Length: 281
Image 1 (cartoon, rainbow, N blue to C red):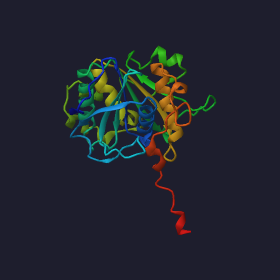
Image 2 (image 1 turned 120 degrees about the horizontal axis):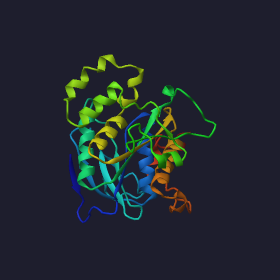
Image 3 (image 1 turned 90 degrees about the horizontal axis):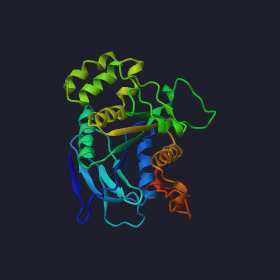
Image 4 (image 1 turned 30 degrees about the horizontal axis):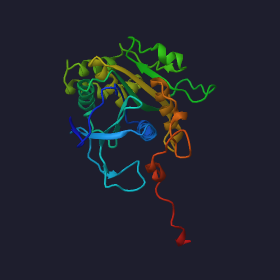
């Protein structure tokens, strides 16, 4: 992975927390990162070039008036006022290359001196075993603060530890050994024909990223929510708010589009395509 710093830009030492998405159902993690970038007024400082990520290009996602800036597959943003670095991933990882990609991200984070990595992602609602909506939509978390994935700060925020995490389970153990470089990628392919229901969670991108950041000795917290495909913007708000709570930010202090609160990314206006041309009717 190569980091290309934009001309005249630099990394801020005070931005010691890194937030990034892990691609999953509904693209909730990516939407949440878009919301955080827009709302914290984060500035793009460069892009990351990784051979494990498919190429793509698009229009600027945040500015309504075109400036000639293109959106690329992996972009790095920083908000010194919020002490945050944010990475946005706009295209998927090449099939079978997730571990390599996660290792490269972990190397980048460690080289830049990041102290805490927060991964935002979503889980398939159809896999939810114990549905409890009594307190509204629930945030689940996974942390490397303790061996079993628990974290006192997350518990105080009212979140639930992802009970499906078992560090002694076969695939979680293989992820750890892969992240530490103890076995080759080919070794894990032997398991692919023998995956069971318990292997769903460790097979997701967030699990590979969690294992690789942990192997680098970084503090890592995964924030997760269950959702279905469809209009996932409410899920993105929920996940972005959870990230703010974890780092001590208050969304009501953001300079929102309508006088306060969240800043809605300009690109969200075309999430479901442009409006119909009414002159046709």
